[in-house]
Image (cartoon, rainbow, N blue to C red; front, side, top):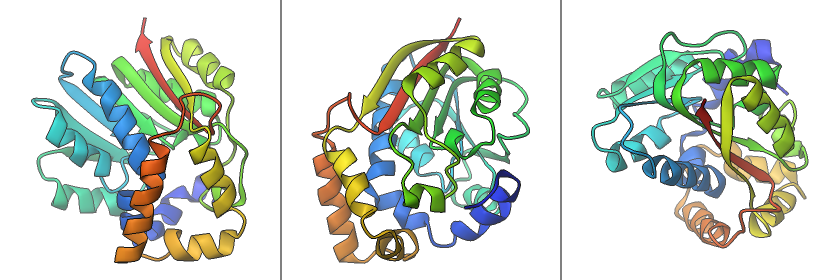
Length: 243
């Protein structure tokens, strides 16, 4: 499991093989879709920062659905930030280690999906996110068991809704929506892929480019996820507003 001080090297290497996983895998795809649907409920934000933007999939989707919003991304991996600057020239990008720093200034909307569980101290990470938030902060973190595959990709812990709510409120934000999403299909998926972590990681996490069969399977699982309920699940999605 990568330690916080080794995250930069870990993710620089990981992004050589994770692009299709992030693009097609049902869990990140579902998170992007749900968080963007929440953002679209707001009056059109002027600026949006995605912390932990990875290869920019969320920002690319947002660029199609949010008209007139200035989009920016930040990530701990200089390699993926350099690639994003070439592939998404209409957006701004910066390297950022949420364990140690925040970007100057504030954005109308800050999104942060599946990052806080990689940080050494979730309260400090959320305080840094809040410092960059002008109006709205949208966060996703795992709230179910800490599975073997989670450890392999650097999760330090998972959270209860109360722990995330407490950290957000301590950072000066008010939680307006909190869903422990994913029952039953997402929860079942997490258990199934962890029956044989080696095989699951080799097939989907470390495989590089997805085959047509992998893409089809990912789409079918994604379709089942859309039937999951917004309670009793292993995925926490939270919207918080500056007081």
